[in-house]
Amino acid sequence: MAPAASLNAGKAGISLHRNFAIASFSLDASIRVEGPDRAGLERLLRYCARPPVAPEHLEQLGEDALIYRFDQPQPDRRTQLRLTPLQLIERLAALIPPPRLHRHRYHRVLD
Picture 1: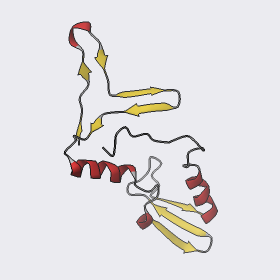
Picture 2: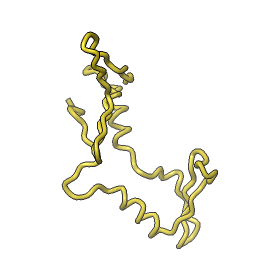
Picture 3: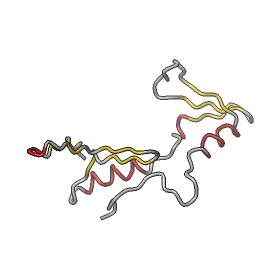
C-alpha cells in the first residue's frame, strides 16, 4: 500500500484531491492496493475488519467495574477509562450504524 499524491490536471489548473467530504459522507482514496499485491490487500482488509475494542486492553475488576487501558495517554492525560459493563455496551452500541446505512464502503475491495 502506498499513499497516492495529489494529482494536478496541469494546463486547466484543476487540482484533483483524493479526499472528499460533504455533509455526513466522506471518501478517502489516498490508499490504494495494486491488483497483484495480495499481501497489501490482506493488510487493508485486516485494518478494515479490526474490532472496535482491543480485548487485551480491557480488564474486569469485579462484577461492576471494567478498566480499558489506552496505548498512549489521552489529551487530558488519562491512561485508562473506568466503566461499568452497561456503559461499555452503550459506547459500543453507539458505533453500530443505523439499519440500511453502511458505515464504510469499499470499492472493488475483493477483486
